[in-house]
Length: 165
Length: 82
Image (cartoon, rainbow over all chains, first blue to last red):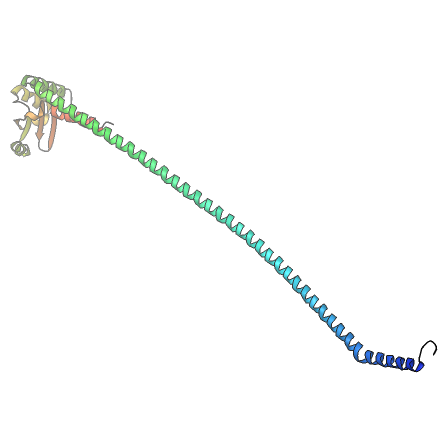
């Protein structure tokens, strides 16, 4: 063994040294390091979990927001349709009322025109009557000499004889 | 007409209005036609506006047999006819 260059003492010392090193390393370095690594891993895992929860929450929030927007849009459309229907109804009522009023105005105007026409006709008729009577009166005054008057009076009195007094 | 109004308020007198002065025959004919004129005095009043015929007034009674009133009736008839 010595020919191979191996020193037993040194080998033993190195083995003891290695054993001591292994013991010390295992006892004071490897375990805390492993614990530290484990703790770090746990922390990482926790962070990951938190991140996942946050992402999940964000996703839910986004979904909720989307839902809220959709609902708002739906409600807006519904309200708009309702308002449109109300406006159409109101417009229809206004048009109907206007039409009714216009019909009444037309009917009143027609009645008034008829009344005016009748009044004018009556006025014309009365004027024609007045004129006719005036002309007859004038003509009679020219025609009625005392003889004619006597004759007419006689005729009137004669016609009375057949009637009771 | 004021004088005739006083006359026809008199119960003993009757007013006969004519367009000309009535003759006795005409007065007699009028009396004959209306019995209530037999016992009253008849006063003849001339009013050219009645044109022809006579208007008899006695108390509150008025009998209009004048041509003017016939014309007026004709006028009213035309007025009332539509």
